[in-house]
Image 1 (spheres, rainbow, N blue to C red):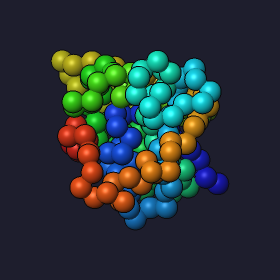
Image 2 (cartoon, rainbow, N blue to C red; image 1 turned 120 degrees about the horizontal axis):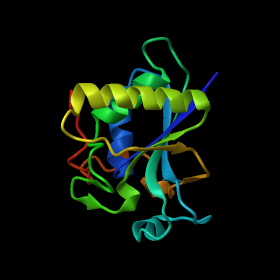
Image 3 (cartoon, helix red, strand yellow; image 1 turned 45 degrees about the vertical axis):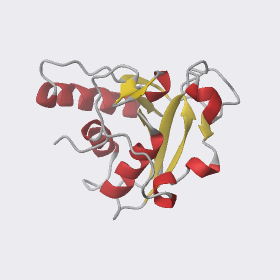
Amino acid sequence: MTEQATFAAGCFWGVEKAFQRFYKNENIKTSVGYTGGSDSTPNYQKVCTGHTEHAEAIQITYTPNGDKINYANLVEFFYRMHDPTTRNAQGPDRGTQYRSAIFYHSPEQEAIARQVTAEVQEKHYKGQTIVTEIVPAGAWFDAEEYHQKYLDKNPSGYECPSHFLRW
């Protein structure tokens, strides 16, 4: 049975690439898009204005596989690959569309996200505060086709310098 995980961690190109690299031997499907806002017809130009309240996000469809891939692992990796202590920013990218957020799809995912967040806060961010939003998943809007797998199509394309493994 497949499950979904939805995360926002800055520019969705780099977030997608980070998950693809780390989980390259697992059966995950990724797509980039917009969520968390009020506009029912978001597109890249509108989202970049900040007026839609949408975040650039990644949606992962996966089949849980014991300790190899499960929701807790995905949440921990999400924290490893970006800076969850900056509000509405990742590296040089600024705006609400670049916020750090976990969009949960069930009460179980919410509980896991909150537990992993507390563990990561205690273990890796003492003296700093994780500002990641943990909110219910809402409507999902796929980004335009040219954004999907962008860094596969454009290997030298822009990748936010804040997307790297921290531990």
